[in-house]
Figure 1 (tube, rainbow, N blue to C red):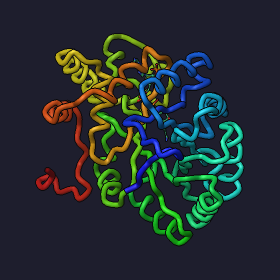
Figure 2: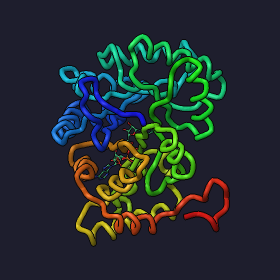
Figure 3: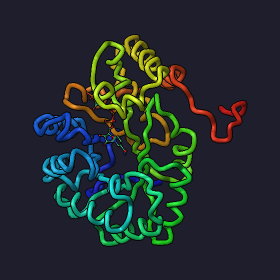
Figure 4: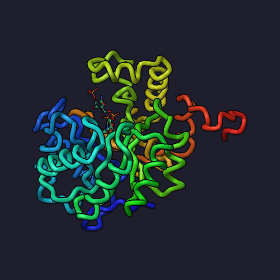
Length: 311
Ligand SMILES: NC(=O)c1ccc[n+]([C@@H]2O[C@H](COP(=O)([O-])OP(=O)(O)OC[C@H]3O[C@@H](n4cnc5c(N)ncnc54)[C@H](OP(=O)(O)O)[C@@H]3O)[C@@H](O)[C@H]2O)c1
């Protein structure tokens, strides 16, 4: 099993904080306040990407971690734009390291599957970076399970290994349960799933007439546009009210409780929004509440299609 630790041996926190909003919906001051709130709550794991907010997210995170990067696990990603070829990985990673002001990054993910570049080229490059000490762990994001296993076989030929996966995963996006999470458990790979609130849907704010990413971003509106997803958010909100807890806390705690999950990646635009997601770190979700929450969401079909045998 991949053991995620900072360079000084500090363990990965039960949640990771994602910096996608830094320099976007969160200005520098709001970003710093969220970073400090995370550190105050013991978060040691931070996620960003070359493509977020045209580099501002990496720049801001680099400033915040400067005095304490050895105590933290800092992850970034390459190849969302420009593919996963050697020249693009090296150029983007170089830029990321400059922005982050780090010689070594704890995790470098390929941001998404690139069907035009041979895996040999991508993984030879990642392996070189790892052997040079510039990357501690190699990860992949948004890969299907077969793509992970195919890439893992190629990585082994270069003396490397995919240590961590970053799939989308929430109560309204459970596809990862079918193949990715069982594969990760079986292969000993860590998992840092993203969007545990379904981009904000599972806060319940849209039922209450609120606005946010789903009302301003068409991609997210489509991703979370199915009526059953909104029904799930409403049912979760009702359950949360009965339990006297924020729906966001329940949603993050639910994702974190899956045995394959190392640390869900939480995010927000300010500290007020962040508080209920951070609270999931210390919220104890009972098995009974976990099962009740699952009942209000749609379970994906099993990989073999043999519904009668699904547990
Ligand atoms: N690998 C990938 O392809 C990928 C893709 C997406 C994200 N990620 C990573 O995962 C991280 C988390 O993803 P995410 O931002 O989609 O996570 P999320 O937790 O599903 O959504 C976070 C968003 O929900 C809204 N929100 C959060 N708390 C709230 C509250 N208490 N009340 C009302 N609204 C609230 C905010 O957006 P609004 O206020 O705008 O509604 C916030 O930005 C990112 O920062 C990034 O590091 C990776």
